[in-house]
Image (cartoon, rainbow, N blue to C red; front, side, top):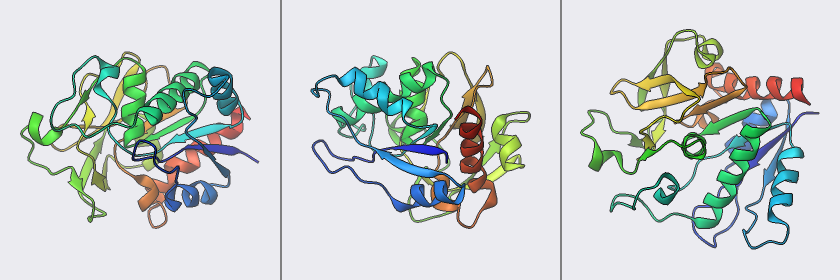
Length: 238
């Protein structure tokens, strides 16, 4: 059976490792076993070996949503609108992402995950969309399952999976990709131009989305398709 790793949700420094159930359910519906990868403390003996083993133990990986990434990782000082980072999670997620990319492990990077992907490859973020950009859309609508639309680029992995050029998504983020990392290409934007999905130019099995498809996947085949694709891609590499 295909094993899909889930990066742990940890929203506060020193807080609990947890996992919202919708991630688990979406992976199970796709026919794979979800395995939660704990936040390994940087002080743990043999840290690098542990992180290598974590990546090698799974066939694919979902990078889950969560708190803001420390701007030091993209060479900026923290602005007032940037929330308090979680150092141990930043270290673990960036380490896992760099390892997953290096071995071409299938990746689905969700919300914070797309930001981790971009930062791990050398890109940068808007630390706070409301204070840095004058946008017509609100990207923080946690109570609305259909907050706005995203426009998928033609001939992209995302478009081939959702079979649509326009897709209704939820939205609960205040950060987003600013400078796109080398090697990535945009596969969708919101109607106000914010980058909402990315993939690799070389076609490797990796996709990042700024919304939360796990929350919509039970009732939406287009959103479940992202998890189905991850499992198929992981099965081919298992």
